[in-house]
Length: 430
Image (cartoon, rainbow, N blue to C red):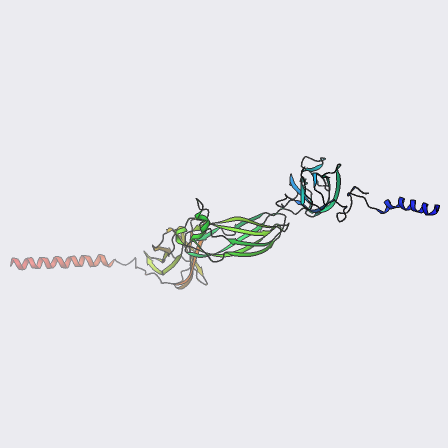
């Protein structure tokens, strides 16, 4: 009988050794029980991320006073109140109050049984922190309704420093030409440290939106845009992608700025969809359309000249025009240039460039290149090149040592006229 009583008492003494800690109290190592284990009436960890309860945000090294939210669920059967928390993060993360301060959150809120609640802390991220996942631990103090005392739960979790995406757009060539179809290339750059994925871009024709605004921010409704939607895909940090579009600009937009609004939809490093608006700007130049025609060779004052005309069929004058001739093939004509100034619209501009030879003159056919050099309204230098063949005749030569025939013919004519006049007078007198 004594042995049975001894074993019964011994079993009661050994029972606590086989039971776990209640209420998620601190165990060996100071990190508490696993988040997958809980006692009845405990809170359960759900998520931890940078941001607020309404929106996750991207964070990179050097960011300060960043909100850090931890979300829990009250899985017990009773409401809890007086919720407070402390956050333990690895080296490189500190409280917004300064290094050495405890990272605290005090909501003093209630959580009904079966509902979620959250704690938001404010954290500084060190400059040397890298983009990766990190471990963390949170301590939650709370009280049950109709129960005295404070309960404590510890939860271990993983969180990620995502980096920060930064999207910029620009036109590789910011100039368009009126009265012409332009092939446009727009660069979409991710200048940040976080990747973005599933990038979709729409050129928004805000005709209906402009009706509800007092001033227009775009004139895209005045052009012809053949493409309006682009599926760009993923853009890694510090890289870019390009999209192309075909734009026809009417004459009335010359010397104006075209603003094309873009709606950019993408998924950030948290996997949340973001939609932002950007505007890409273009300056619209006038059209200068030059044609060289009526090329010929004439002799002027004993000098052979290459002549021709230039017609501008655009809607803007060419500035600071020059015409040059250069030899091609076996031609020994020297390069020469003539300044012709402005090349006006719908008004032929003549040119005449003297022909000079490098060495002895060679007459007959010569292959030459005629180049018209000018500048447009933004002072970009442009060229029109025409390859042609001219025929150079040998100039006529006068015999400078012989008597001038005019000096002989004129006195003879005068003498004949005087003689006829004298003979008529004598006849009348007789």
